[in-house]
Figure 1: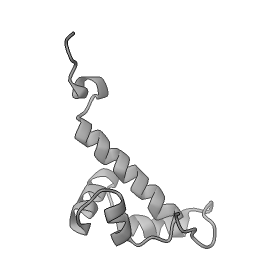
Figure 2 (figure 1 turned 60 degrees about the vertical axis):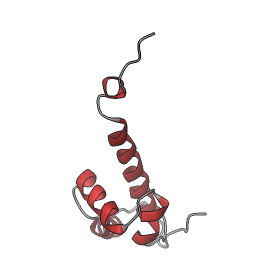
Figure 3 (figure 1 turned 135 degrees about the horizontal axis):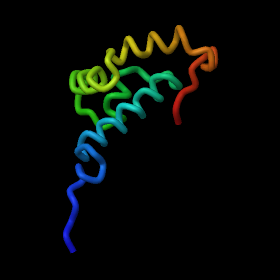
Figure 4 (figure 1 turned 90 degrees about the vertical axis):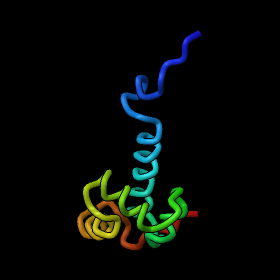
Length: 86
């Protein structure tokens, strides 16, 4: 049986899909938790803040801190106090 490359199945590389998934989860964490960006960095598989911020900015188009500020000021569905993740 011949194996099919992951990129052919997904339309992109596996590492790109993993990055996209980690950043999407990080976005949710920024929206719905009280975690600091530094905490999110390690929890989402990045070794340092620089690499996380670079990947986040590349995927989302803005920095993690700017994303967090925007979400706090524009999302009417958020509770008034952010709920810590457990």
